[in-house]
Image (cartoon, rainbow, N blue to C red; front, side, top):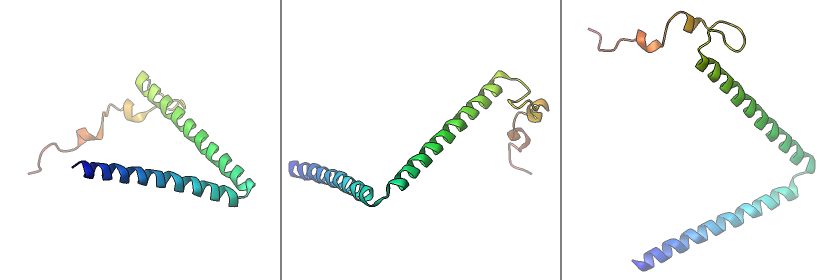
Length: 100
């Protein structure tokens, strides 16, 4: 039993060490052959994606806060006809049991 545990741990360690080594080597190779302007462009694009994600999160939070406050107007000033008409959800329109 001890031998199995020993070799299991050794295999896990060798696998992790090999994975880390390969990742480092691959990064160095990519950096060596990638032109500088492509690296900068990739960094700019990734920061733009992060900015878009933050903007999306901000808008979702604003909508959530508007809905939590219970106002009938959204953040853009338009009335929410779904809430105004009294419908709570589509589930109330579905049959609850088998049709006969």
